[in-house]
Length: 195
Image (cartoon, rainbow, N blue to C red):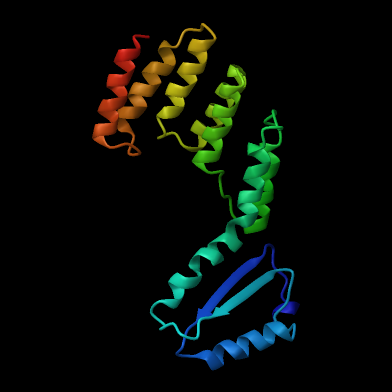
């Protein structure tokens, strides 16, 4: 069956069955146990919930299934986020590995990209913090905080920040990431800083 199929990337298949069709679960599970559904390209796993009605079984297994599927993506991000890694040269290779694995581009999360900038900022490596936030903004241009973060790092370096503050304000106007209340709060905070 699947052991003869060759694909460009792994296919994840997760299934769960409740009290309504336990025999179907046993049939598929026996194929897995007998090694008839194994393949380096086909990752299949299931769970039987004998006391669960069919309307609740997806909710019982979805968390584990999502973890299985996105574990590789999370591992590649962890390599980038590692505090020992202080260069950006590996990011393209990591993103390429993710694309090869899933068959489609899947960017790093906003939290990881922003976190790398804050790591460098905390270490006093402001130029690297700026570079990390520029990488983040290339992927998430509606995250206005990035412009503000860059202005903050440049301010620490004693550099002119007017361009970044203008970019921040302009981005904030059109961003759909923030509520109107949040936008007003950011602008008020900026006024109080008196930069």
